[in-house]
Length: 68
Image (cartoon, rainbow, N blue to C red; front, side, top):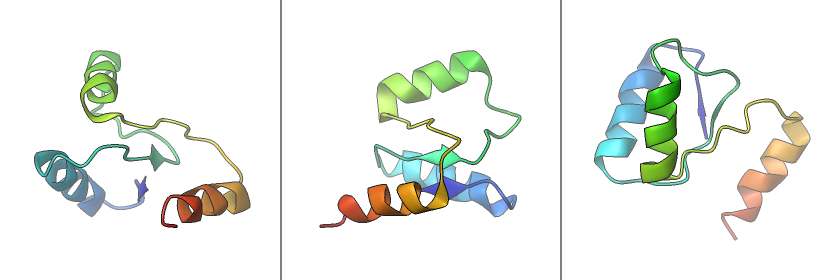
């Protein structure tokens, strides 16, 4: 999961993509530089998860389910 509350998140996101990490969940909103075409390419190549609006408890449970 990667939250866009700071500019550092862009550097972290690019680093994760460079490492080939897939299934990254972005939120709570998309950064302004992500165009619809770029989002589509990231989704197809890196399995980008754009389930942007969710309840905190449900998001936490979903994240913890992947660690088991």
